[in-house]
Amino acid sequence: MIAIVDYQAGNLASVRKALDYHGYESAITADPEVIAGASKIVLPGVGHFEATKALSGALREAIVKAIDRKIPLLGICLGMQWMFESSQEAPKLRGLGLFAGECEKFPVEVKSPHVGWNQLQGRGASRLLRGIPDEAFVYFTHSYRAPVVEATVGDCVYGGTFSAAVERGNLFGVQFHPEKSGTAGLQLLRNFCEL
Image 1 (cartoon, rainbow, N blue to C red):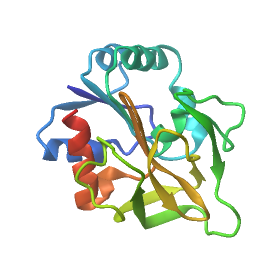
Image 2: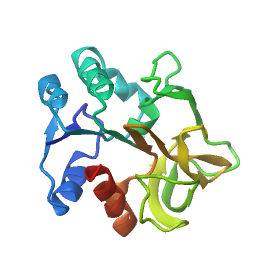
Image 3: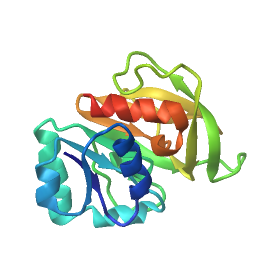
């Protein structure tokens, strides 16, 4: 069973509907025991980095223990940003620190938030992006962006280059919304489910 973590900041119904489309059993939950027993974890997110404050205590502990057991984790949008060390959006709040770096605001030269379809550029071999054509269009909606790091497997250019997809071991994150990204997004979710 795939646990879709409910911390009151996610696009939960759309993510579940996309997983249902592929025939995978999932549950929207904030129960640490359910998360601890899941075969995979999806951490969606929409909104301000401050919302990740709800991912503390027993919920955070369950996610960390699952990661330590090599359970695949997919962070989506804010969920991916929480996988980094921090965000300028809420400087006093720490992320999970799975990837180095701080998420930053888009420069004033471009319209923010970055909303709409943009191209995903692959950066080498990726289990998550398998079968998705290079320069496929995916759907973004965010005001802050993750830096390009060693784990970056896909990027996007908007006011500079930023991480659109990261991958290391059992850890995966995407800045865009696969549940709203048509064929490319459905392929990505299938790839994650088939790990």
